[in-house]
Image (cartoon, rainbow, N blue to C red; front, top):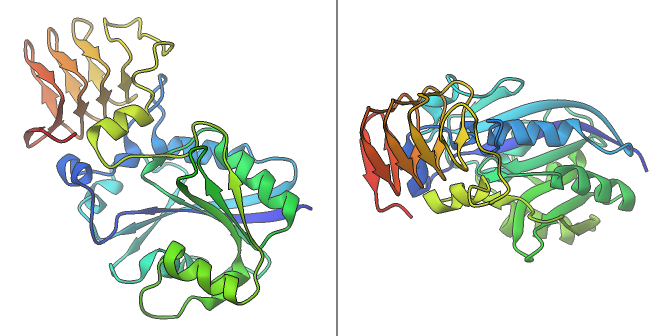
Length: 289
């Protein structure tokens, strides 16, 4: 079966932002998670672009952001190729947001929906392949450890069961509803490591494979197992170990950053040593595991 993938929607924010989102004060999907500095959002876009042959993709990339602390930074960092849809209400719920963002599509068009707070590899391609193979109305991604992967593909007509107003969750409300209406809903186990979620500093470092001993080392400085945004500035004499340096951040000569996240326009000044912390333009936040 060949399916038409018309839209990929990433959901960011919500009524209860995670501790790391509050601490960082920016959109976490703009942070680099690969050795070459690609962001979480870049990986989602690459996953959609590398769709299998069974999928006919003329896909709009849409980032749906709720009115949460990261909204102010979205316009400044890392959304190239994605159109931004800001949801003024916190009370539509994920299914409501997706329904509202697809009103212009045909009932047989397909939509990929994912959580922006997850790092993905080739699992998007495999999910699309599994969905096309079964002809299901919805296919839910499951991680190799059987945990929810926060990504699914569905036929637009299923969203007709989402109310025009009010809140509807995907897992607890929307999926049981369409199952009760006879829709064909399948699950697909994604290839390892799956779609890795992050709600804490250590989650985000793990999602970036920071502790992978095979990760490349930047020849420009003594950084080891670091993920550095292309728009960040890390001086040659700086030491960055098992850390993420976000867009517009700066680490000066002689500074040491270990197992930490440096975000926004934060500056780690020359000679400063930072470990196990989140650094923002407003200061250092510790004890956020």
